[in-house]
Image 1 (spheres, rainbow, N blue to C red):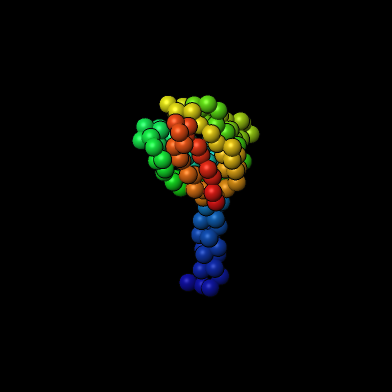
Image 2 (image 1 turned 60 degrees about the vertical axis):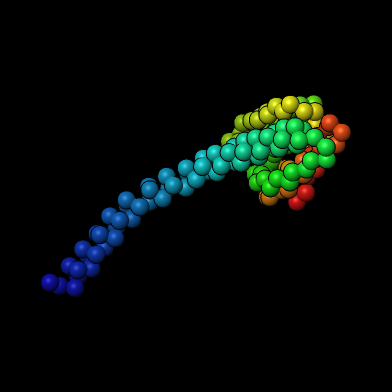
Length: 138
């Protein structure tokens, strides 16, 4: 076997592998953004559910009950509490999404809008004379 023949065969094999791998890598890259969006929606949905559940728990416990939650948030989320509803709004793939969770107790949450950046937050849920208050800390 000659050196040139081995080099040509090696070049053909490497070219074939590259031909197969480029579309696979491109597909993974394109779908990566889709999975990132799904993870963001899941994070917001889980956080909203946990906060609503904690509000109900603290409300039913009464007295000076308090729960501290650790929640993960993606970027671009705006959150607010009105009466007995918690509303999370965010953009995902160019579309605006709203997640609303209802509770059985009225809430006071003046700083809930601090959940707007990517990261881990601590949400302190306290019962204060029948009104549940939410305090956000980073």
